[in-house]
Amino acid sequence: MILKFKDTFITDNSLECQKDCFFLCNSQNKQFIDQAKKQGAKIINVEECKKLLDIDENIQIIGITGTNGKTTTAAAIYSILLDLGYKCALCGTRGAFINDKQINEKSLTTEPILKTLEYLSKASKERCDFFVMEVSSHALVQNRIEGLKFKAKIFTNITIDHLDFHQNFNNYLLAKESFFTDESIKFINKDAKTIRFNVKNSFTYGIESPSYYHIKAYSLNEGVSAIVMAGNQKSFHINSSLLGLFNLYNLLAASALINELLKPDIKKLEAAISNFGGVCGRVEEIEKNVIVDFAHTPDGIEKILDTFKDKKMIVVFGAGGNRDKSKRPLMGKIVEHYAKLAIITSDNPRDEEPNKIIEDILQGFENKSKVLTITDRKEAIYKALKLKEQDDLVLILGKGDENYQEIKGIKYPFSDKIIIQEFYKNQGK
View 1 (spheres, rainbow, N blue to C red):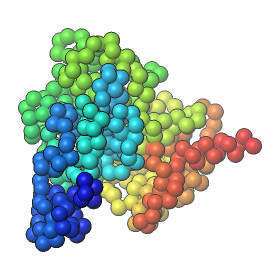
View 2: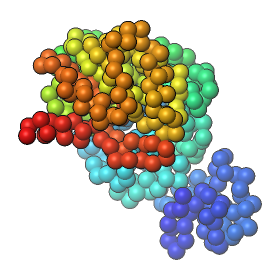
View 3: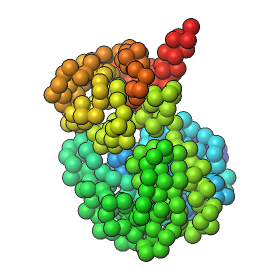
View 4: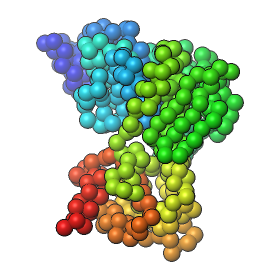
């Protein structure tokens, strides 16, 4: 990457170096220092780069990690802080935002450190008080947050995912644990079944387990509503149009962090929580009883399907190529348990053959009469909408608000939302 700086530039790639540029050295590229020097580069570390970019040391960085819930929890924190009158930046799966304006399209969940420093520099120029970021397990292993000092961190949960990268679940868990060894204030989901963290400066939150921030009572009818207790003291209410128990966890984590850090006026906090409308592509109803969601792990799929377990569901889903194959039959098993009908289709097959991915998912089904396989995702969505009866709920999972489908290294324009809208537009003719 090249970041323009005055009359020169900063890079983390020694091949891009030239006379009088700056080479940002970190643990991932330190073996290329000599090459960068030969090409005339000045070697700097993250702290020196912060000073060059005039990054405000007073910006409070908040990091969220976990298998599921990172995006919605980060977005909730960002939205609530803005409503409370603070200036704030956000970066993650959906892109980068500063004070409610998008400054970059969606990319990696956690960008390389030089890109993050660029965002921090822009946030400093806009006098942001907070910088909220999603932190992936890949980024933790690859030291993409090296040199950042966090004010607070959240652990949402951990379930099977990314084993193609981490090789086994223990390695995945170790990556997450490594995020919680500093002096920041931590907020840990006590209900996460595989949790084994015992960290300093931590607050627990939960619904089932005894936790510092815990739910006294809640309702999931037409949104989520709950009374939150902090210790033995009543703290605040959560009232939101967001659906599902998983979103109650997301809102609990976000509001607990803000309440603990800022001790805001409770009425203003409650209003800001209610005002958060969620994230595009996360349990987003496109047409009546037709929902798209990003769920692409066994746990994520089970949580959204359990939310609508009282409905007759047609579920369209697939699995990403070049990713953890062990979760594919598990996803199939879960969908079979909840759905009236499953339609397995292509997600982002990447370099794999879509039909092979579908076959892997099929291994999780015992009753093949409850499943159709349609490789073409548009055809699969159309089929689900054609088969939909009046009281049926159609759930289209895996891609959320993605606007592409990745096949053999090429990202072709594709949006589940647009496909649904096209179907209903054609039906109206």
